[in-house]
Image 1 (cartoon, one colour):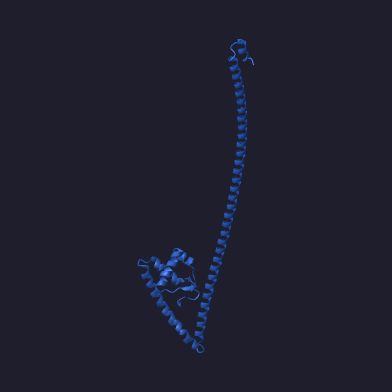
Image 2 (cartoon, one colour):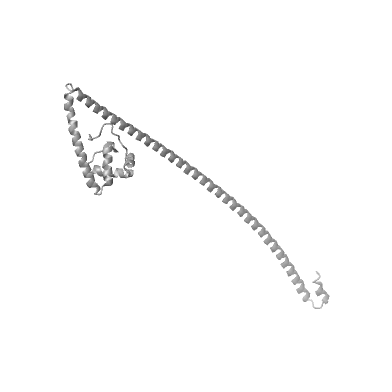
Length: 235
């Protein structure tokens, strides 16, 4: 457990650490994983890391190192363990001091001040977490609104597109029916014209057959006057 945190020490989020150290937020997570893999301890709220000044210094050391990151992380873990051991020794003395509180009011005052400072630091951390949670809720709300706007836009666009397709389909259908009626009318006129031509041709053939018959009859009567032959052309 971390006992090296100073009273009223400020807590930082990953985003704030990234700005403080001058690296990207994913890099902060990467460095945190390397440190934890080698035994480093972070304050945590669930799976979320909470950074203090000593953690920022560790991240800076990883950022500026020329050695392999795991080697530097091991050195930082060793330094943290030394700090924690020194802090644990001081913490162990507190129960002994607590037992002697009736004889030493000054020590009681120091213990109470320490607890007050710890409580203040915890409250500040809770305020920071509350602010982060509020900011996260705001972002989620904005994302939901953006999603609703995008969905509405896509829905309206789809409706307009379907309406255009239906209109074009109706126009094409009307145009096709009009062309079909026009072609049908042309076909009827052409059939009538063909029928008229056939009637005229039939009349012409009938007239020609009658003429040939009269001519043949006139030729078969040689004894008659030639006037009879010419008379067929006058009929």
